Image 1 (tube, rainbow, N blue to C red):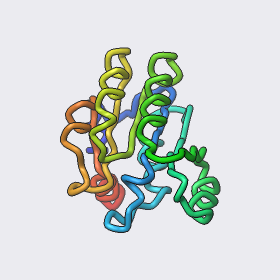
Image 2 (cartoon, rainbow, N blue to C red):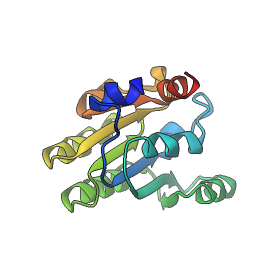
Image 3 (spheres, rainbow, N blue to C red):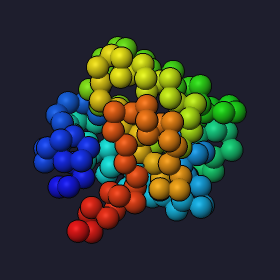
Image 4 (cartoon, one colour):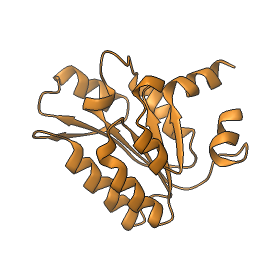
Length: 159
């Protein structure tokens, strides 16, 4: 696959545990038309066994969204207010505790840049998954060891 070659330098995805953290309020927006299945598949394409598949939502999340996410295999984390702090702390804990070899974050929020940098310092591969090219954060893209958009992944699947 050209995408794997671009991301990892070979046709083989890295092995090891993959932890996926999804910033719901910043990714699941009408303007991006993101499907949770696409995000999960993007993380699965990164390598080995999933050690976490977490979707972070605020208290305004609808019961339908929560149910749909759980039905798709996501662990749903509901926070009061902004999800950024909880997600960043959890991502950092996974990195420093060695609970994954690959950390993927689906977001467009630059607040997660320090968490990705910490994961990089611990020798993990980090992947910034953007909802689309216009929803991409340059800061996240530059902080992660790899970056991809859901559009690129869809194009890769279609070829």
